[in-house]
Image 1 (tube, rainbow, N blue to C red):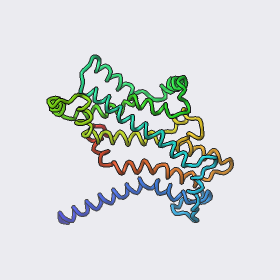
Image 2: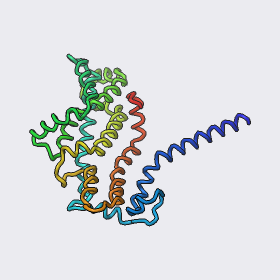
Image 3: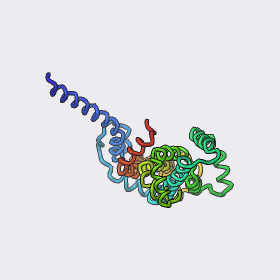
Image 4: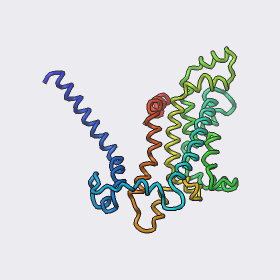
Length: 283
């Protein structure tokens, strides 16, 4: 076997392995998609991927819901919760990260260490204090417990990401801008912000997916059905049937619920990979 043949065989095996791993990874999504067209007996009585009889009405009936609110309401609610949370998280993290990365002030290292410490604090530990504070402020059963903390930079993971990214940008850019008469705000928004787009996109994707899929916090702070986001609506669809759950309708809505996250990820994949690589947050 000559060198060319060995290289061809090696590449073939490598691609075959990659395709095999890809199929294993994508199989749950394929199963979920085809399961949305199965009836309950078909769903639980067969391991076949392909349905015996297609149930085409699962998406329409699932979207109509089981109460007075359809999934149009639940999707709108989810966007009303997620979009401000993501926007304010990215902006506040950029501002705080800029402060830590570029300025020297008293107790900066202590403040940074405290911020990193909160990164390691389990969310369940602060759940009761958060609930009591938000209840006293009258914010329970609203989206304020999600939006207001994002506005004040309460997500240390993204602040750390921004600090790491901005520290990697040359300080000569700031010094040149100062010589041209720019102040700190101008330097941030006109010089550094365009360069921080990969890190901002990474933070956007992470926060969008985490907030969109969050079930526990939304269950704690939102009580009214008319304000339910998707995650709570899916759970309600299981409870509200009373008798046998029509799982194909629940699965159909679950598929629709993951589409926004998938679209955002694939549209911003280039910046996402670049942002993760340049901030050194890997694995």
